[in-house]
Length: 480
Image 1 (tube, rainbow, N blue to C red):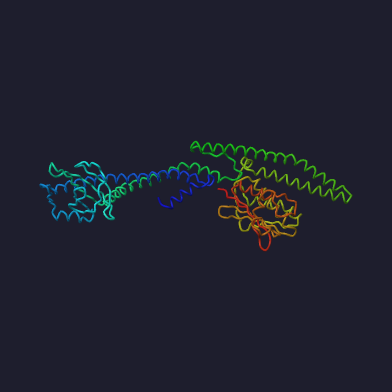
Image 2 (tube, one colour; image 1 turned 180 degrees about the vertical axis):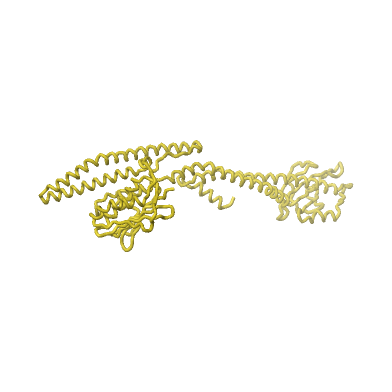
């Protein structure tokens, strides 16, 4: 196992449960036993190979020792050694498998061969014609030795002869190593193949979790529709069911709050309209300057409250649940913007603002599909904001154009605009966020515009105009 892979396994095992990837966790605990088994198999294979190599070498040594013993023949009280010089040279000069031999008559009388061979283990009564095998060394060379005890001499004076044949263990180790390589390579291939199968199985098994994550990540913050994972395994379906239960409870709570706001706004419209009318009548009939000033403040507060209630009702209509059941039609956005601008001209004149349209760049219609009332409300909020905050003497221009597959409406003014910080241009689209304390706005106008634009797969953005001013851009997809 490489050090890099082992490091990764250690890191994977040390990670806290909250930081650990489920995919990595499964990979570690499925591949780690395979690596351990592979190492154990390599260890066992090597020792088995060495064991069988020893058997083969021991059999060869035994046969060599018998052949060498046949070359030493007893004659009377002596020994006749029939061991030609050529055969001796062949045995001693083998470069690949060096062989050592020695013939002696215990207890230590050397007869023939290499007298540096290690003696056999101490045996009280060694059996004749039975080979004994042991490991030793000749100098710095480790060897495998076969020792064979033979009887010779006359009946009255029996003697023993010890024949020893030794081979270096290099051959045995090379053979064991070759067997290990021949076994480990296919086994390694199988381990790699099994690892790929395990990786593919984990990837396939966790695919429903990935789809569930994508379904949750790709959702809009206000999308509380149930999650559909019918083809997922039982465990993932149970998780999706639990999430759906939670989403249903959140949806019910949000719907209850929205219904309360809508109902409250509906109930407040009539009393606020009456309060505003009564304040206007009282202000017109009052003669005391102090009382007229107070009634003027009451009238302004009533107007601001009525505006807030109207904005809340519009926001409730722009919510997904309400927008989904409202009628959608195909209409000319350019004509809608032009007609709306004409209706708001008196309001602009009263505020001292020059309101006009510039459609020269786009003479043709801009047909979009959606709820015309909601889109009209969004445009009205943009124009109303420009009139309200541009200031007396300002100019507000309404432009419409086509940009590829989008219809674009721009409301541009040359008023003071917004502060240059980019984050302010984003935060003003949040509910009840105002960029200025001037005017009597409630911080819902741009939030309504954004909500309506998103319900129609569109976008709205603010950008500064040089040397001063502000441009609001509403983009909606063209119909068809």
